Amino acid sequence: MTGKKPIVAAGILLLLLGLTGCGAAVSSQGESEETETVSSWETIPETEKPTENDTEAGTENAEEQEENDDALSGELEENAEVQVSEVSGIDGSMTGTKKAKELVSAFMKDRGLNSGNFAVAYQNLVTGEVFYYNELKQWDACSTYKFPLNLLYYDMEASGQITGDTILPGTQTPLSECHHQSLEFSNNDLSEAMMDNLGSYDVVKQNMRRYFTLTDAEIDNSYYHHNYFCARMMMDCAAYLYQHQNEYPDALRYLEAAQPGEYFRTYLPGVTIAQKYGLRDGYNHNAGIVFADTPFVLSVYSYQAGGNEMIGRLAELFAQYTEE
Image (cartoon, one colour):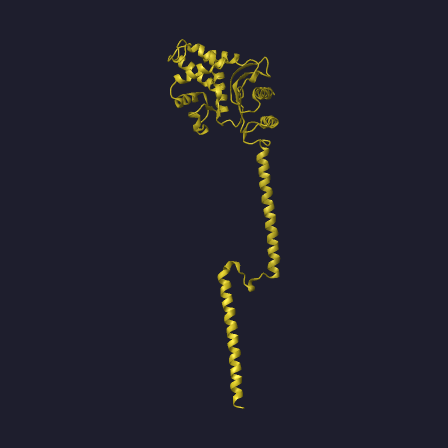
């Protein structure tokens, strides 16, 4: 009997060791499965838990980052406010004096005008001061194209290429009367015949650039392929006519008689004005010379934006601004 006790004890010991080994194996297998299903950067070892000091430092860093984020947000908001305040809440950019910007911004806000429905270009013919808003946007020019078109023909007459007695193809009207009908009464049929007689559309548009001051970079390519012009082009055209009045006396006379009591003339009675309007399908434009005590040129392009009344009030605004 005494000889069997060590054997039993040894057996019990071996059994206990076997159970311990199985538990270790199970524990090891479970750890392996967890490692396979959880990526290493998602698991934080117990030994890397932050200490109390680390927690305090992390809180301070988080607070500092939050302050930095707030400061950055405030800076961005401030910059946005500066950009908006430069044009008093009006979208797009303006070129001109601070006073002119304030006047036009207030005018636009009162009338719901924006870069989608309004453009203006102004020049003081004595000082050279300019004001621009949306001045390079290309618009369906309607009948304003007749302004530079007629100047081209007058130049051709001056160079001897054609005469005022010439009957253009598709008409039974002398060129001299075509000028009259086109500029004063905006006759479409005769104006289109004048345009067709000059040949390729893109060549005609290129030739018209002699009356404009815009660079190649300032002119969108669409200008050459459609009846598109921008407000600054027509302002330049009016300024060119003013500077060369002696070369185009008939053009000046016809434009001074056009649209009596309308457009720039509406609220400037008694002021001599040479103007060419354009009107079709919601588009309403006007460009010309205002022979005030201090003469200026003005070009307004618009779409469903108040029409003749708005354009007249804007001319009145610039007349008052110019004389102040």
